[in-house]
Amino acid sequence: MSMALRIKLSTMMLLQYAIWGIWVPNIAMHLEKLDGFKENPQTKISLIFMTMPIASIIAPFIGGQIADRYFAAQRFLGVSQIVSGIVLMFLAKMTSFPAVFIGMLVFNLLYAPTIALANSIVFNHWPNDKFSTIRVWGSIGWIAIGWIFGFWLGLPETLLGRKPEVGDLFYFAGVVSILYGLYAFTLPHTPPTAKGGNPWAFLDAFALMKNPSFAVMAVIGFFVAIELQYYFVQTPSFLKQGMTLPESWVGPVQTFGQICEMVMMVLLPLVLAKTGFRITMAIGIAAWALRDFLFAVGHPTSLVVTAISLHGVGFAFFFTVIFMFADVVAPKDIKSSAQSFLSSVTIGMGMLVGSLVAGPIADALNKDWPKVYLVPAILCTVCCLVFLAAFKFTPAAAAKASEPALSGSEAK
Image (tube, rainbow, N blue to C red):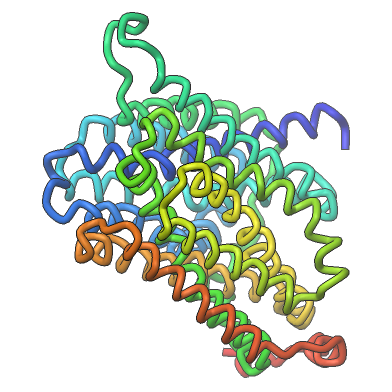
């Protein structure tokens, strides 16, 4: 736990999430300008966002069967980031929908496995109970790159010799990715395991669906994840077109959600201790419902901008807590599988469905923003009410659930 190691691992996390944090808030503004996205733009943009959930579903196979078995984690991380950085550079020149879709899919297939690899490097060289002290730098990286890129877009044309464009995000992300890839080779050596992980291990946790509390949480988590992707897809266009924010402010304003998230993470243990899992998670869902209702109202601008902060409340109080709850109720021998299962249901399938519906809804409603945001607002309101009515959890139930798990064959 030396300071030098802390700095190395923290820098790794900062770079890991800076790459993600530059394209998610900005790419929609770039794509809607391209010739290949003129027809049904929101539908096509949402399909581009779908490449990340697809890659997240495939990532366990890449990480478990290739990275874990044949390569030291830091080397696989380095090569993946360098290659993905090169792909990002090429994406800056692509204008057709098929080319951008394939390019983003290739990029995310390279990037998605590195999230788990970065976590693995931390867990191998840093105490697990101190993981948050390293992971918080990922949020800082996301926020920092948002403001840096926003500053770039605001620079005058006379200073650069050309007008900064939102498409420059690919160059920014590409440079960060390549630098991160080179930096990865300096990280602590994390050798491959003798045997690769089982990519189907998350199915072992399917037995947890027999637990009514876990089942309710997983199902609600799936639907709430649809709203999460809906937010990522629609918000940049909404802020630029619906709220007439300058492009240089769209990315920085969206970081208010991550700033609030960091504050909520500090408050989370206190809220959990005071209210328990049920109320804490319900607050998280309700925060996103309120945010979407305020987006639907659409004025004044200060209210809408403030509402973005509610993203941090929902992410900390719901998306963080569902994984904490899974760890509490899962038997010891399938705790890791429970986390993988929940990730597949939410970040994988939920956000994939969100990608499929977000764009067509906006196009069908002709970007009538009040109507566009009433859809997720109502979805989250229903989810919150159903969750409060159906989620029943007691410490006794948790103790019973933590008894030895079913055998592998029974679990499947």
